Image 1 (spheres, rainbow, N blue to C red):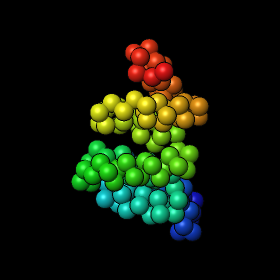
Image 2 (image 1 turned 45 degrees about the vertical axis):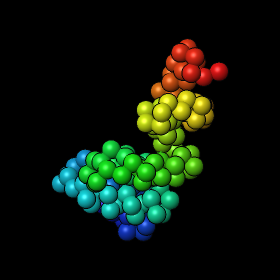
Image 3 (image 1 turned 120 degrees about the vertical axis):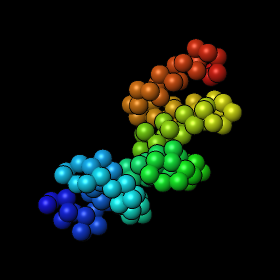
Image 4 (image 1 turned 135 degrees about the horizontal axis):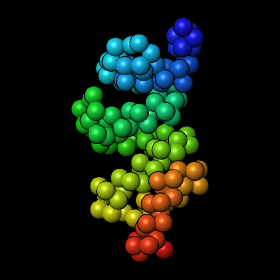
Length: 135
């Protein structure tokens, strides 16, 4: 297939996409979380921000791998530095949820992702202003 040809050539986007299909059992593939993690790891090493985001989710929440919040956060940071909007939003969310309500840092993350069009980030910033958590 076209995807496999791109994977064989080391295309990070295609490798990350194939990882997603293994994770969900798409494209007629049998669901294989372990294989998905392997593919995302390869794609992340090749620079895929989507793969970093996917690995961030899996490690942070322990989905298909042992929970490792710091490792999940590192993957989100890598993706966010490459411009991945959802990863940036996730970093803001964890500042509020798990970092004793670090609203200042959360607002910084969410302002960046809101400027890039992330609706939940925009709403989160508005909500923090209304509750007096941001100025």
